[in-house]
Image 1 (cartoon, rainbow, N blue to C red):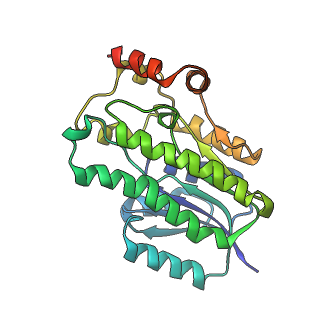
Image 2: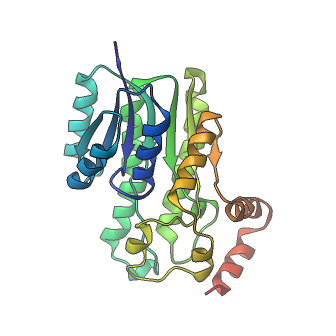
Image 3: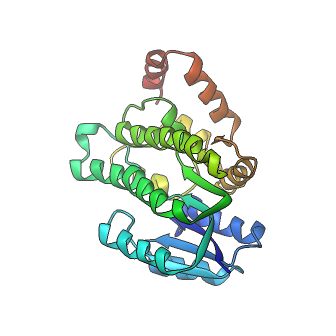
Amino acid sequence: MKKKIAIITGASSGIGQEFAFQLDEIMHELDEIWLIARRRERLEELAKVLETGCRTIAMDVTEERDMELFRNILATEDVSVRMLVNCAGYGLMGRFDGISIEEQLGMLEVNCKALTRMTYECIPYMCKNGRIIQLASSAAFVPQKNFAVYAAAKSYVLSFSRALREELRERDIWVTAVCPGPVETEFFDIAEKYASTLAVKKLTMVPPQKVVRDALRDSYHKKALSICSLPMKAFGILTKTVPHGWILSVMGLLK
C-alpha cells in the first residue's frame, strides 16, 4: 500500500511551520509529513512535537544537487502525495538598484524557480483529489514600489497556479494560491534589511494561524484563491477595478 504523505517546503518557521501544525491536527489519514527546509535543527524540533510521523529533509530547494536527491527519494519511496505546500520563499524591500543583483536573483530562484521545480517533481506522485497549495501574496495583485522583484515573483506564482489549476483539473488535482497580506512571521526580519515596512502594512498584519486555517479551508473547497483578511480582499477587488497607475500613486504617498 502506498504511503500517504504531505510535503511542506519552508517548514522550519512561519507559515510553513504552521501548516505542519495544522495538517498534523486535521489530516489523520496521513502516514507521514515530509518537512523540508535548510535548518535541520528546526525541522527536527518540529518533528518531535507532531503526532503524525515525520520525515525531515534538510535541503536547499534552489540547489540542483539537493533537488536531484529529493527526486531520487520520491522515485524510490512508494508514496501517494495527498498535499504539497510550497512555502519556501523570502522578500527584500528597498530600491531595485540598492539591493545586490545576487540577492535579487536569489528571490527569483526561491520564489519562482524552486517552487516550479518542486511542483513539477511532485505532480507524478499526486493522488486523485490531491491538493497543491502555493504561497503567493497580495503583492501579486499590483506592482510594488521598493518591492519590485518580490511582487513580480509572487505575480508569477499566482499566474502559474491559476494556469496549473486548469491543467490538473481533469486529473482531480486542485491548486490553490494563497495571497495573504503582511503576516506576523520572521519574514519582515529579513525583508527590512534595506528598507522599513510601511506603517499601514503593519496595521493589517494577521497571525500565521489564520492564514493557514483559511488556506486549508479554501483548498478543501477547491478554491483557486485564498485571501484571509477583509482589507486584503478589498485590496484585491480594488486592483481589478481601479487603474494600477492610480493605485501606485496613492501607495507612493504612504509612509
